[in-house]
Amino acid sequence: MSNILFIIGNGFDLAHRLPTRFDPDFREIAEKNESNPYFWELYQSAEPNIWSDFENLLAKPDFNSLAEIFEYYAPDHSSDRESDRDGIILEAEMSGNLKESLEEFANQAEGKLANITPQRFFKDLFTNGDLYINFNYTHTLEQVYGIEIDRVLHVHGESGNENLLLGYPEGDFSPEDIHEDIRQKGRGPYRDTSIKEYINSLEDYYVRTAHEILINKVESFKKEFKIELVEEFLSGHKLINEIIVYGHSCAIDFPYFEYLNVTFPLANWKFFSFDERTIMNIEMMVCHIGIRNYSVVEK
Image 1: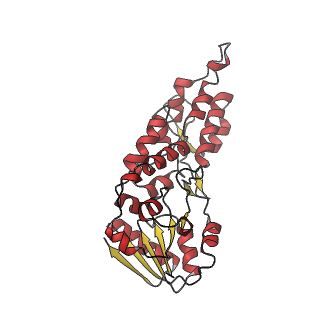
Image 2 (image 1 turned 90 degrees about the vertical axis):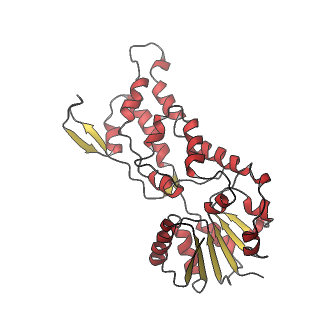
Image 3 (image 1 turned 60 degrees about the vertical axis):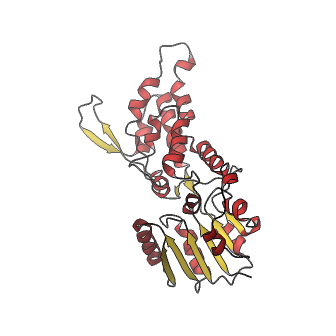
């Protein structure tokens, strides 16, 4: 019986040439599904190009351009038709639905598995009885390498189910302040106001409701850590002596690594790294968590 636990991240799927990059694979799907392309920019106070950046930035949306975007949908209070007033609310409800885009993204990658062949490196790396904590949505391990499903935990959900997780760590939500024009004449003076304070100050019901819908939607993109799933998955496997990390950026998901380090304090960790940024992430994480026995393999 093997005593090896693998932690599998997106780099594993990328090694098999699956379309699982944040940019362009997910970004193109998400932008395509936005009713107004400008809404996409609200989620990003900076320009991300990898998953960990994107997820962390979801906690810091920038709504400063929202007033300009909403001008086109401004409610017409002189009209007798409700649709001329609540269009701004409907637009907000149609925007920012990243979960649907995430499902499309996962299913698109899953559909490519039939054409993927196993690689010798991984066939040699994986042995009978290994356990796998998989942060990917795809079933590459199961379909390409024949790993038994009860040996794989998809901790962020899996393709084909509606349980896909995406987002920032709970408690990290801190939107950019609104640079509010006090006189509302475009010439200042300006002051920084929290997004929720700004929304509460909006007098128009339709405009305020549209803002509330969007901020609540973005705030819902928090990622709950499923430590209890890991605990249940590993119950009965107390003799893990090696933990191999492949394809994970080591820039997010720290509670899982911390739990494993506490649960298996004598385990030897092996991290596969692909660039200098990942090496830096690994060194910072092992120092923060207190992992003592580890090695880094550049690949």
